[in-house]
Image (cartoon, rainbow, N blue to C red; front, side, top):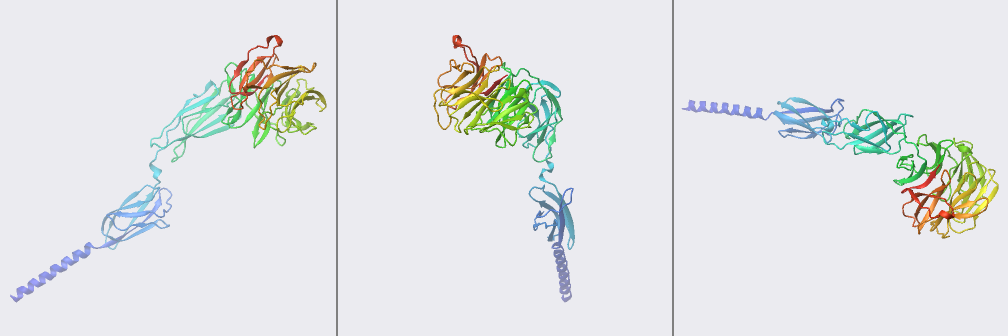
Length: 498
């Protein structure tokens, strides 16, 4: 009996030993170590969160992209590498007791699976289109399969001079350009970006603008706060000659040189420019000595010497400059400190008419001088109210100007009843030609027509806020003063008709 008990005790001890060995093996642990780098460049990535499933401990990579998970119970694990801005990645790892398993992660940006936008398809103008009307509306199509917001850039190259213009941050698939040249060949291309992938370029298309002739009328309209110069044949055809993002005004055509001179604001100063009749080859004439006066909306200048030179004011000084930009010289200075507001040189260059006033735009005088600066003839002076807009007749017989006969004066230079007058140099007679002018309006900026049987001018309410419209009317005589006014252009000013 004693032997049986001894045998049972030995068996129990052996069984206990076996069970103890099995438990120790189940609790064995190992280590997971690894590195996280950037896909393609193998640059280490710091602060990547490393965790496992089943859960164990969580660590972050160091500056070398290295991590270590220690005391991980043996078994099969899915190791996760996660960081904002990168695609999360999983790697399998089998942990054995007292061993280290190595894992390498190559992470990609979140955008790695984002697809590029579709190549823009150019719709209008069609490739090699001709006689394309100005302004030109550019139309294209594109899309994005990931639903990303798309931004476009239109690039436009002038075939005549290779000048490239870029229109950026376009969110629509249409864009209108207004200030192209007539009869020019252009090339256009569209770039699309989804802000994730590299931009995608369309093919390059070519087109040619229509050649429009007969634009004898010049005038100014306001677009986005800027003065913009237009030309028209008076029959519905209108061409924008200067860009809408610069302030250009007071156009004056010279038929001998086939050039248009105008004023433009450059760096806060007003400079003289010239351009071709279609708006091309815009050239800055003045630089150090600019055009200046008490109110740049009223200041004028004149062609001289058959289009070879230009005459312009700078406060009380009168300058002449070559149309090519050289040889500037002062030809006259007012003796009384008044400002020169307008100037007109006669067709034969024998006479220069000047309009001067004080810094408030009043106490005005109109008179003529010789090219050498000698006083020739006084037209009007010593009157209250504002004077404006002088133009000498082609045969030197008369001078056209405006005067506010209300004689009202205030700090804003407001006019209440500005009318057009013609001064006869031979008789000294001054004749009012503002026939049928509506009450409460002003006639402003008159110019003789090419045959001098008519005048072109601006009429607007005297409230200083209403739109300005351009009219023509016959000069006529005492027998036909009831001639009708003809509305030519609405919301326009500063006319010229050559």
